[in-house]
Length: 319
Image (cartoon, rainbow, N blue to C red; front, side):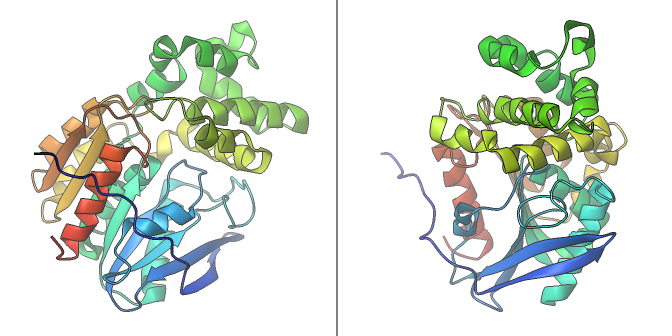
């Protein structure tokens, strides 16, 4: 007997949108979908430097949820575009709290994938009393081994032809520290070099996050405006190790002990090695842990999407 995989809910438009001045010169775009006053939830997108998109609205039963989605500082519709000043993990944690107060809920389900899992953990460990459930995909804890695996040596062995394109903008004598070499160029004054490097950085990710090649999906990562914000912000965050102490998110996972959760991770996730999801599951026994065989990193991979939809249904009391 086979069980049919669950997919997205139908397309939906927000019932409310707005811009929130969060200080420091930043304004963030937010939207709400579903049914006003239903089960509250917040969706945290990836990157850092990614954006929200219409499919993310479709992860929740619209009759049962009232979901806030927002573009994090510096990306999507938020301003200033690709701005690095006053843009750290802890600024974003504070922004999530501002949004919670704005919509007027005491606690909410927190859903984050990839970098969104990092941010979700940081928020939940800072404000556990504000999290009713925590749903995480593609766990990333921003330790030095994780960063080196993706940007120095590891995935380079799995995707050598893509790695060759990634290192191409960087001179041979700087390739021992790829993140720092990119940082100099992404924050430099030469706009042509900045764009070249942004597209190379962003495309490296776009081409390695699905198990099988998906040219339509990865093409978006090479678009100029997206690539500039994605590469500058992601590099900015990772050069600073997310403003986290090494191992902090796993060390403090005991703070999640009273929060029901679900962890979903693809076996062949290239950016985010499965080891760290496994460690999180051991440190957080209240979470259900699903390893998805035959899947990479992307939210849209069938087995991953299936478990995420099942989780949001279950947390809303729907079987």
